[in-house]
Image (cartoon, rainbow over the protein chains, first blue to last red):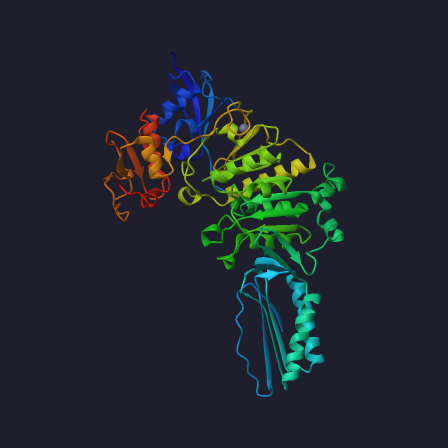
Length: 82
Length: 480
Ligand SMILES: [Zn+2]
């Protein structure tokens, strides 16, 4: 395992719960799925990790995708309002 | 005098020293027509024309029957069985003229005044009866759409395609407020509106099809009126009901494009499935605070559940009422939805069928994230439908999943009433450690309790669930 630096953007309810829209982080997580779980616990995002989708460098990816050092990650929860 | 009224009609007192005969006729909605059971009626009028024609008719009756006065008030909008549709009142020196004049007005009214009647039947069907519905008006249409037909991408051919198109807008709230006016103005031939909700003052900051005067009225009715004022040539179908698993297929099958303007995830998912079954394209959008998200689902492209294969509990991200919403956000997203539909019908540009558009109205920034079909999608792939692991729908489901458990109430100390079964009270705002063992967490609505359960799950604890529906769902629970 090696630390990777990533920029994370939080959308909708995740932004509310994180209290900010964007940050740069260092993570030891290997995959996108691990990274989501790590952030949910660390920042009390209060959403089942299975409900959060991640885009890496402009494309939605599945949870098994390796995290790329220097990646731009967008975390997207379900959004309900209309 | 001739008037139209959106409000229930009540006969008014009459007085005149010189008249000896007063006739008041009340026409009411009855529960059957042509051997079919009728549930309600709907009257729609071209207001200005109806009033000017009605005034002429009343003047003619006064002249013809030497009436001292004649007054007609006709209801418009949705009427239930038993409600008064029209009141005609005549006054004359003698009873004979008063009766005859009243009856003549009633007969003439149906033929001469442009008020249309729609009957809603018990079998779910409905239809316009009597006079024809607002008819084609090619000249008006041509003038209304003149500037857009100048675009090479549209032209006369495109306008014909728009006229032939049928678009269903589910929900007539904030997204529809952005979407509907532009679809109508562009000359979409038929618009279907579904919503069982009534206008509330708290809607108006974003649902700008409505005014303060509309509070308490059916949204579909007022939205339809807005649309027909903007473009009288659009045929509007109003469905004052909720979209359900029972009626979704019928609605979706009858339209060419579906716009999701709903405010909840179950409806969005229901539409996604129904559109997939019927091969109909869907434009879905949702909003949160200052942000919005938009995507188009093509019958052969990635769907909404490709993105969210696990069905979230409906309260997992709260509602507009809980989170708050800036009015322009659904307005802008709704306009973008209209643009997607127009793109689809006219064939210009590129649909958001393989991307999701995210908008942040604080910064004005947009992100367009590409997405692909998910082989594990429960709707269009081979996956099974898994629901949010953090929630149970009932106490019996909690028993089935956990066996023995402790109930934890996370409402704040000032929230009442206290629940009657054995429980532990740990307010959400100060919540830190939870008891060991199996837990069923409850709150008022099921939103905060779901957060607690999700927090536990993320921390590796799988024996904590939230009760859907909050304390109300505890009511039927009898501890053993
Ligand atoms: Zn899918």
